[in-house]
Length: 453
Length: 177
Ligand SMILES: [Zn+2]
Image (cartoon, rainbow over all chains, first blue to last red; front, side, top):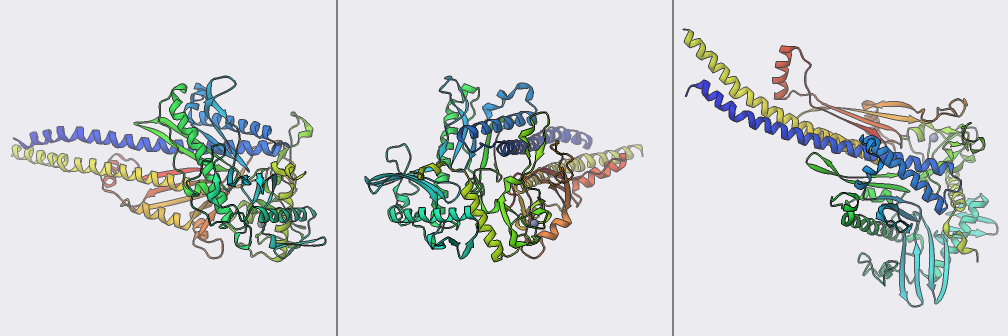
C-alpha cells in the first residue's frame, strides 16, 4: 500500500474518534459550567431572599410575633422564587415551573425553624408547597414520673422549661449565666468583676442569676443527655444520646459556662438543634421524593450531607437554607443547596453583632476597633439599628429613608474588616457587658410571659 | 525527478497528518481537561470565599497549589469589591429617597496578599462582609503543546493567541468572622 493510502486510512480511523472525544469533553465542560452557574444562581437568589427578609424585619415593628414572621417569610420565599426564575431565564413559564425542583427551604430562627416544602395543604386538600407549622428546638427529658420536662433551646443561652419538676407542673424561662459570675450587693451588680451601670442590663443579670439558680437547684443533678426523648413520640429515645449519663448539661458552673463555646451545655444544645433540624428536613425531603409525581417530577430527592462548617453557621445564626434538585443539565441532574445567614435580625443578638458608638466620633465600630475615640463613652446597639429604614410617617408617595443613629460605618472595622484587633480594656469590657445585658433584656421572648405568675 | 518531488511532498504531508494532527488533537483535549479542572477549582475557590466571608491563607495556598497540579503554571488575579454603604446620604440628605445606590471600592491581588502574608492579628486571612463582590481570574502563563501548535497556525492567519483561562465571581453572602 502506498503511503498516501495509509495516511487516508489513518485519517478515516482517527478523525471520528477525535471528533467523538471532542464532543464528549465539550459536553462534560458544558455540564460543569451549567452546574457552576446554577450554584451561583441558587446562592444569589437565596441571598436576595435573606435581604428581603431583613428589609421586612427592619421595617416591621411587630416582626417578632408569630403571624408577622410567617408573613415576612412568605414574602422572602416569593422573592427567592422570583429571583430564581428570572436568573434561570424561565420567568416566561411562571413561578410554578420552578417549584417542583425545590424540595425544601428552611428558615432557622431564634427558638425554632420553619420548613417550606410540598405537602398536602389541609385547608384545600391540594398537594403543594406550604410553610409548615413552626417547630421549636425542643426536646423532652424524662427522668421518672416526678421529673419529666420539655426544654426549648435557642441560638443562645436562653431556655424555656415546662413540665413536671419534683412532682409539680412548672413553666419557666430565662437566660443561663454562671451564678458565681454575677454578684449583687444592694443596687450594685457586677458581672465577671465588672460593674454593670446600665439599669436594664442590671435587670438581665439579676434575672439570669435567679433563673440559673433555680435550674441548678431543681434540674441540674437530674438531667443528662441519656434522658432525652423525642417530642410527640412515645418515649422514643435519641440513639445519639443513649448511654451518655455523665454530662450534667444543666449544671451551670464555671466549667460549664454557657458563654463558652465548648461547655457541655453548648455542645449538647447544638447537637439537639442539629438533630431536630436534620430529622425534620430529612423527612420533608423524603416525603416529597415519594410524592413528587403530584408536581410532575420523578427525581429521587435526597437530603444532601451538609458540611460541618455549614451546620455551625446554621446553629449560630438566623439562617436560610435552600435546596434545588432534579433540574436537567446535559446528561445529568443538578443537585445543590445554599446556606445564607442573616446576622442582622431582631430575634437574636450575638456578641459580634453589636456595634458601638462613642462621644466625639461620627462612626460606629466593633468593640475591638483601634479607631474608637473615647472608650469611656461607648454604648452598644444591635447591628440592625444602623440599617436604614422607611420613614413610615410619610406614607407611600413621599418615601424617605431614616436612620436610628446618625453615625456612619467605620472604614476600619466595618466596611473593611481587616484591622488590627485591640485587646479589650476594662472600659470596653464594661461597655460590652452593659450592651449584652441591655439588648438581651429588651429582646422580645416567647417565654417572657411564663415568669409573670 | 518529478516523481521524487511528489513522493517527498507526499511523505511530508503524511508526516503532518500522522504526527501533527494526532498531537494537536490529544494536546487540545488535554488543554480542555485542564481548563475544566481550572474552572472547577476557581468556582469552588470563589464559592468558598462567598459563603464563609473570608479568604484564608491556607485556602489561597491550596488553590494555587491545586492549579499547579494540572501541569501548567497560572497567573491568579484577585479582585475584591468592598461595599461602602455610607454614601447614599446620611449627612447630605441626598439619596434619601433612593435605594440601590451602592458604592464599591476595589482591592487587588497585591493588596490582598499584603494582608494574607502580613503580620499582626489580621494576618492569615482577608475578611469580607455581606454584600462585597469577589472576582477571580486565572490564566496560564506557560505554553502548552496545543498552544504552541495553535499559536503557530494563528500567527499565520494573524489571530490572537489562545490560553487556558477561567473566571468566577459573585457576591459575598456571609460576613467573615
Ligand atoms: Zn472602627
